[in-house]
Image (tube, rainbow, N blue to C red; front, side):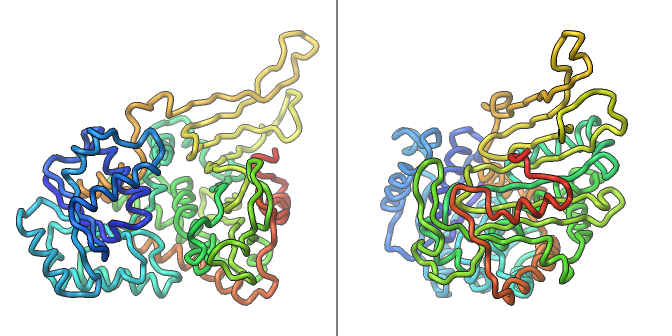
Length: 484
């Protein structure tokens, strides 16, 4: 299949950090369809040669395993082209349209790696230039709006231009191999599904932890915060993957219908729950992995009196027959002790224990998302062979490392998602109604925190957030995985 991939924001941070390395890996693996062309679009005065030189230079900052050799890049660079554009100028879109119609590729992917405030303008200009053809596919990066109203406004503007089947709202967590294995674990095996319900599950924990602070994104983060940046999209999509019912098939809408049901079943916020089931924090100066770091309010572009949250911990419930009463704990934050994303399914204790077991020990399934990619199954096993200890059990675990087992065959999240866009596969992309339900659920929190004069609770960089996060789960007699 021949394709043209038009990358709006082609000189931006996302383009060189994520998209170009992913496209190069697909090219290296031989999975990028032949006859492709990648057109970077930006305002800088560049031509094809200078754009290729810029991208080559930026590859020096990519992790070593994903850097091309000189020969590799020379071959990859043949796909790279550049179009200088002012995204508000109709004449520039006419020039792009002329270039795209020169060869009539089978599909044209318009990837909007720009500020969300430009999405509506770009879509309107695409339509005015006649580029909203049946072969056009539009990729939208998060955040898609800053609240429910702005999200609806963007989605309505996009749908005036293109059909829903042509719109690919990207959430790169859904492209992670470990998330794909979560679907495979649940719906491709008979082992866990009978246990995947309230009768056997005590609680479920979702953690997305980052060592980094806001880096050079202080200005962006000030208007976003952890709830919008991570919970409304990544964390809730992971919750859906864990809690959804088995779809009738593997088609895109069958999967997305079941995720939508989970979002609609989330227990709504009440004034009492807003105070007891939600914690927000903001990092202060501390030390991460032995390196001293400054606090959030000292970061470049951040208001010295900022009330923006860099940490969120929530207790959610899915009001359904399968999950009624089971707590879902969500935690995400910056400047935490480690870069770590995982899902923990804590199973209930045996109903009638006949062995001596360590206090608080239970069966646990840990799904590692990053930086590891694998599964751990925590069991209890007999600790010793001597007769005196025959009734004592000790923790043991089975560990499946997907990187070791499937390393040569695995692809990164953006690589997988970009190839799916070119193929027209919507399974791993978010539908408009999913986004709206997610915004509807988090909006009461946003409103409550705007009015709450106490602001976020401070936590020292390099710790696991404010102590109120531990208290949140302790009220249910539980604890976060690293505290157990």
